[in-house]
Amino acid sequence: MTLLIKYIKLNPVKTGNLIPDINLVTDYKRWKNFYNGAPIGGPISLKHLFGKPLTIAFYSKHWGEHGINQLIQLNGLQNEIKANGGNLLILTDEINDKELARITWEHSLSLNFYYDTNNEIAKKFRVYADEDPTWNTFSGIDVNVARLAIYVIDTDRHIVYHHIDTTLEKKFIADDLINAVYGAALVTIHKRSA
Image (cartoon, rainbow, N blue to C red; front, side, top):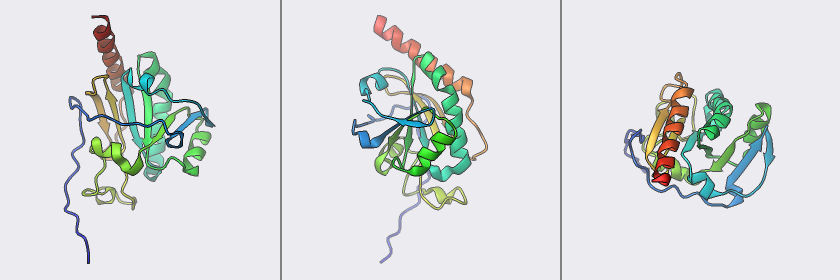
């Protein structure tokens, strides 16, 4: 018996949308932190992570050079994201992968990765669905993975910036991302001081 899945085109969340709660757990097996390519350990403070605007990027090794280039670009912006009051988190579908360690080492990346089990968070952002597998849109990818996407979320869970790479030809504009982080951080500061 063959099970047919009805095709439903992805409709990712965008700027202005409210996202459901993101449930990150402190299970250390889900977190991988790297500093200049070397793995590091240590506790994860979810309160610190969510107390500021959060930049979330979806990554999978199956995106090859496109995914690596996005990681390199985000790594270069990480200090600026933090200086403007935000945090950065990379969500991946394969956290215990040797390929991830190799990529971070070769490119001296200092990033925090979180294993998105069964693409649960990617589904909430609607950048992953069984009804619209990746191979329907991109040739050369034979695994269904989350689309390459970057979001900035304010502390009230509103999306204030999005970039979804639908053609693998458009890089996100760094200034737009940083401005979104800065603007969301200002709103947070004003709320706290009011």
